[in-house]
Length: 168
Image 1 (cartoon, rainbow, N blue to C red):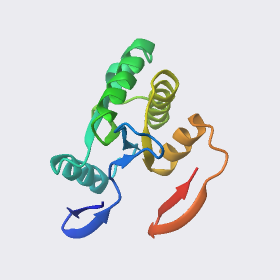
Image 2 (cartoon, one colour):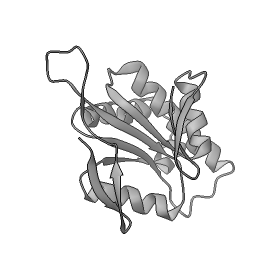
Image 3 (cartoon, rainbow, N blue to C red):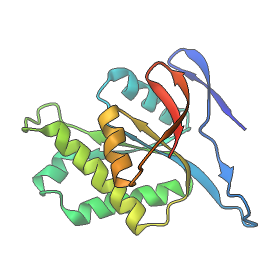
Image 4 (spheres, rainbow, N blue to C red):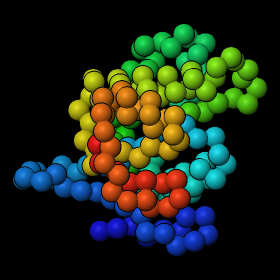
């Protein structure tokens, strides 16, 4: 039921798995959706490792393209549609791709706005079946949870320092 994989050199058991929806006779499987706004190298390294291990697919959002087009709604919807398609067969992590030379005032806020708009389009316009959502980064978490209109989160346990597991 669980996937065991090396996460940067040490053995960890992950909870990213397929889950049949309760009460359904057809074989609808749900997947994990993640959003990461983290710029930490270790986070990027772990996501790339998980992608190479075929645990997840990474949907990289080119931030520069969206900022230049003033948050083109069509492009945001196209990204959301692509994620919805990927989620039919895969666990998916949505990650901003930022050009190091991009010098824009309030860039972090713009990235959060883009991730939030993608999440909003994804859940508003497409039938998305997931059994959990993984949010990496405090501000990313608050932005996505706000879009999902989450009022409270019941913290079940702390997996590691600064890594909580909870229920919306």
